Image (cartoon, rainbow, N blue to C red; front, side, top):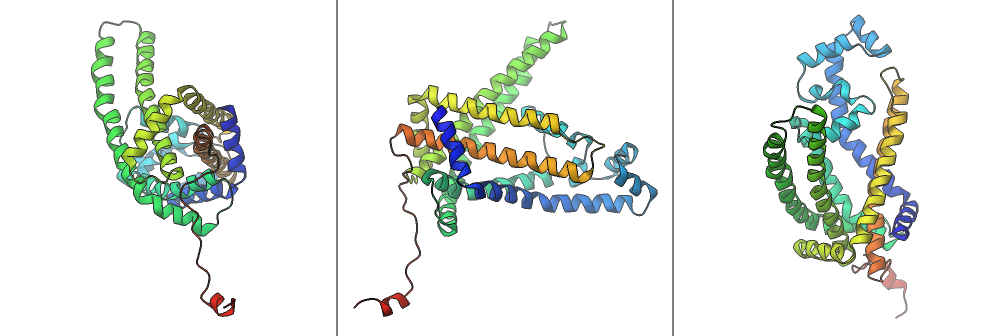
Length: 330
């Protein structure tokens, strides 16, 4: 599994444009929301003295007034989006299944669609581990997009069970019954933390199975996503130590990135350019971590099946120009 982890690092290093492309896709999806929020803030500030104060630093009195009068994407402009608090806010929203504004839900759905489209090309490039060209990349994107949509629908159903009935049972049935007669708040905290763990484990298991299903779909050119999921389960069942060990290594890398961002995250007094640069660097590092997950998992799968660099689907090539026949030997 260590070899697969290092192999994943090398595969990403040999395809740096994947990092740039995924980062740009994230930036492009977020830009319309940022422009919309900018318009709302500009309309609220106008040409007032408060506008200059907002440029010079954080004005919490104006900020609270803006939040009281805004809606849509403006309602997401809360103090918790600043610095490392944004990371904690996102983790808390997932763990507690907080509802998101409709405009953010649309943006998230669009980002998921873009990610599904790019996933086939990314996995194909990482699995082959050599240059294939833009045509072959987007051809793979198109081939696997429909298949990954079907896989995504299956995954959505499983995640609905986990984030719906299972989450409700843990935190609305089990948790109240466990703390009913408690008098020590610290004990209640540890019980809730344990339930968060009980919630996270199956979510991570499903996440890993979906990853290997995508990998098997691309490497083996599988058309049935149910078959890919079953094959994913068989692989993890036969190689549990390697699969889980690699997943933990990648998860540790993710925690290291979060820790570095915690130390370097901009505060309320940070210059806008610095805060933007640090925020974008954190996003780039997250993209690298996500690519490292799939690159190393692909390397592990290929190494265990003794066909490193093998992908069943041939690389598409444009046909020779008809003019070539006119000058070729007859």
